[in-house]
Image (cartoon, rainbow, N blue to C red; front, side, top):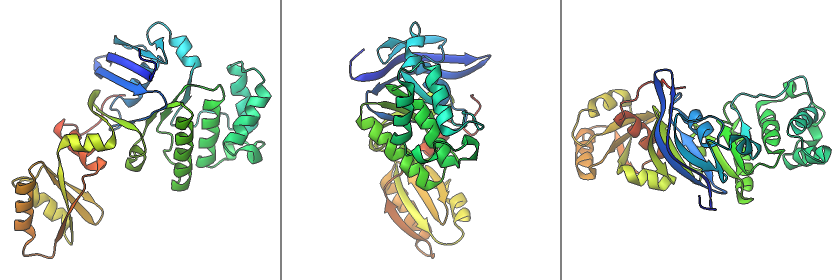
Length: 311
């Protein structure tokens, strides 16, 4: 395994009962990289992350995490990883300081009090150190969870939809903190449903029904699909969407509030179709850059995925 790789896995497979949850997945993550996992609910994102980091043993496949073998050295990996679950998993009836102190005891951290003080100060929790965790808002609970995940100085952070249910200001602050950690050389694996968060990752992987459909930077992933996009504004966009779907050059139509995105791989044919439909109407069309959300919907439709069925 190269020294610049935090994770290097090949051919990972995982089955729960008769259901294949992850299928022949291979991936590399650089050290200090923020790597985002996207996909529908139940697509296998969490299972993939846990296997790559030695927290769940794959049925087949191999790889390394932080230089440790994911099959034989999972205990050593766990000591070097910080894990933040989507659901707040600390103790409501303990204060912030007491929660961090308890985590410090579990990891047998030397000079524990000093480490807790540093964690409190680093994430702006010092002024609330005596507050019960159960009385915190979602954003402050998120900070506590991140502080606890960092207490033992991990080389890699696993974040499972960490900003779900958190207000936009807290989400922004959280992502600024992730980039500070990345700049210090800490690798971050994060699953998210938010497209603005996906765009803040250095690299991305899109997983659906256990299959890795695409990976790379946001720019690379958009370019790889070869989609051209027009936005149409006006009245009765739902009816227009239905009408367009079967016309030449139209790969998909997606409503975004008061706008309709129309995508296709043949630019000239799509433009001709749209001009023909909108020429004698109040609809206004404009060529725009294809978004991450456009291509994720496109990939999911091409894969025939309508409902998530994997854990």
